[in-house]
Image (cartoon, rainbow, N blue to C red; front, side, top):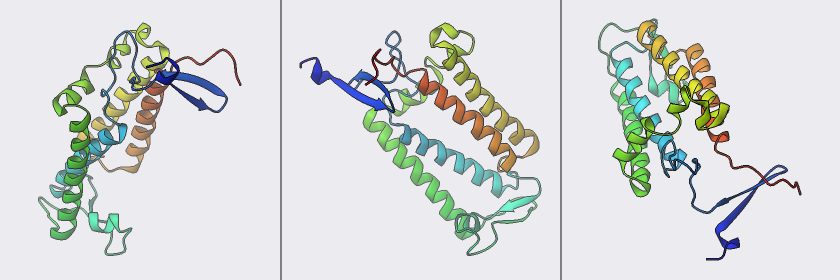
Length: 206
């Protein structure tokens, strides 16, 4: 195949850059990406499904929030059917309709995401790649991907640690304030990680 046919050109505003077709957004030296060649939306579906199942379990055992209990039916219908937040329950509480539908939806997200993962990669390799990749070593080694990747790794780690800390110690799993800080850190981490892998553009600006 000719060289022009193996290049894919993309314009980002006034920045012009080129990457070989099919090449992953990873360093040429390591060839490792955060999740291989799996589409980002597939990973997001799996994460959202697992996260939803965890929240459903915590909510049923009255551990999702210290002062109120979540009705998934009311939350997902914007309180059209019933109130989304009620008083905290003592012990185990299961809402047959709301909890069943929510859990089924989470399982569906996981099934859809893992199907896409299996089409592109092996689930075991994908899961392993979340821990063993070229992002986490940049926590203490900026030379691996520059300052952007080091900042990305720290933002991701701090975001996850912040959410787990307030969730475990203060039952803040569904607290809006905890979400706002966690999302800001995680989003910054993903954005910086992606930016650290963008190939350099051409010298000339068309």
